[in-house]
Length: 151
Length: 146
Image (cartoon, rainbow over all chains, first blue to last red; front, side):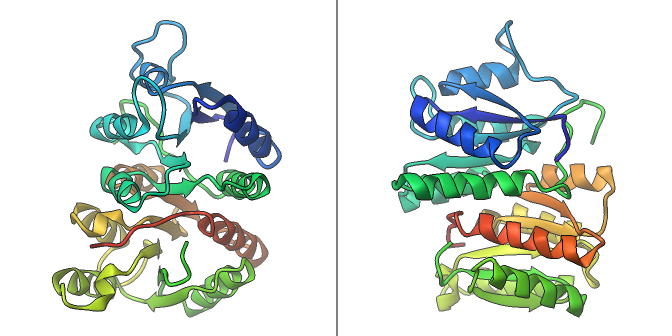
């Protein structure tokens, strides 16, 4: 992926966020990483309802989304993104402790790209994030643009 | 991925199919792979299964690797048909194709592909790319088309 790519991480657990960030850095150092501590923060960023920081149309985004978060949960965030004509193009990867089969089905029905269950074991968790990072840093991966004039 | 999950590989180039299969194996993916060499063949395979509720295949979980330049029905149309179907839309579709046209990249993402990857021209890079896809898929959970 090229340098105009930003990885958005919606994760309320500080320990998990550090672990994800650290292991992504080990594999795809080039990308900016932004953290959002709950569903409301990420929606504010994407829908530009926050004056401080918001998404920019000339950048490309991938969202790693936790499900259990305060204020607005991940399922609602996914739904809002996939209901929006422009934002729906953003690939959303669920990264969560919830391994419930009906939750997995619901997320795919709503249009998530992939669903990853956070491994309980620390080392497996690190390995899973590194696999994710290697995948996201593939040079041959193409992400959509979010500019208005694209189809 | 569970070990009984099936990887559908829509690819008409036999050499590429073998390269994909072999490098998924190298990445530790021992899942069953099905080669579909034609757009209509993919649609028949998926939609026949979708219609026939008695078949045990129905609880099966699939991932589709899709080359857009397959003969028969165009790959973008195949993606569109899958993503418009209530059951089949749950299948993660990885586009793996030669085309690097930004309009097609946009269109596929809009239709709901999970990832768009341009096939590297050098075999060595292609092999590495498939192995990374394999490592990634090994940590992904998918769901049945039921």
